[in-house]
Length: 496
Image 1 (cartoon, rainbow, N blue to C red):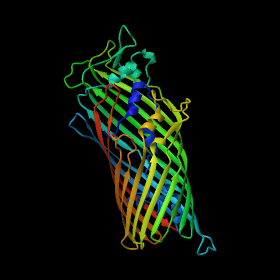
Image 2: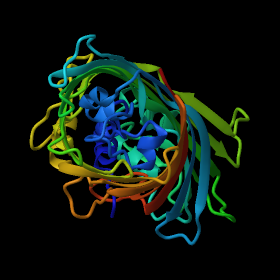
Image 3: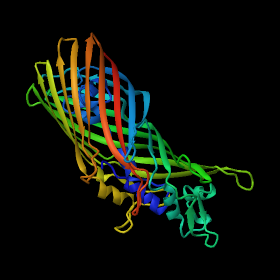
Image 4: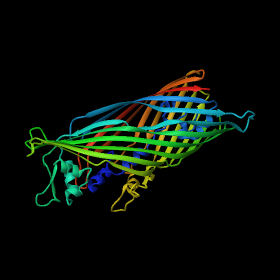
């Protein structure tokens, strides 16, 4: 199994419908530092190279490598296809989504002392701009035919012992209002599902949003040997999802019940700040070594949540109705979130300005992500018997590494060819859960006077398993999902 949704299990057991999860922590902590086309085509391996606006988000010392002022602008086109298959079904369902966006826009200015010497400080540079760090746009659809369990059973389990006024207003109360779970006549705290037949299940998920970083950086070049830099990053997160889950009776069923659909809408947004420090050292003209440190990004987050349910019956009630609908209240919640720290160690070899070989090794401990200062005073910490979100983050995630490598060959003073590879490590401790994945890339660039143009293509293929619901006693059948991502980036640049 590549992924186990433990958070969802706890959510369903407890009946909590509006809560921060370890999945959220992972989503907000994962970042890709390859916003420009040149960086993307070389796998994002620019920690020791510098001279590219993407490098400022990896190692701010990269700004000191610039010898002239520069402006870059990078539009991007992304195509993402998600294919899902049920564990017990012989079918594949696919959904895809195109997206256009701006991956980078940046300005670097260079100041050289009027009376500089051959040794000492050679130039001081300042940069301001934007790098996109993640794109959340994705659509998926999946189905399970003739399922051997039902979400109705979860609703019933969460409702037993409660009167209808005590039911969770985002989940179980909607099921009660639409008559898919009903109390016993003699005991209003005991419930049963509208049917015990085997049902067909389907889920669609539409996700939108992005993560980006507005960066301001300063760097200095000492004797063309040592480059130092620092940056302040202002990151923004916007994420929105709409999930529709439905269950329906089999063809030929004689039940009065037909189907129901449960829809959940979720939106989160936040701003955060971080500090990055870095250096690049050239022991020889051929070799470059780099290192950088990223503080956690401290976010202030706001969330919105609502849900609804619609049920359909084959027969009408005494009032002539066969369809029922119910909506939850609109919920809002605020809290703070802290991403893990990062350390990046880099190396590059530059051979006669013809060939560049570069690599970055990044360390990040996802178990250090943390929620805190909830709107209601929640610190998101529990205990051994009743773990809360931060406890699950610590127990499920681990320290891992990401590897980025790239190669550039200059076939003429004006034309360069590039290729790259990235390996993103598995953030999960369990050997049964593997979400590591690879990214393959390539591209080319041309220079003409003070103008340059770069193009890149990258491909990623991710795979994971998940469940619609899970409790200590039963779970849905497993869904296998393959997510393929194709990106094309074009960078337009001007030196002045």
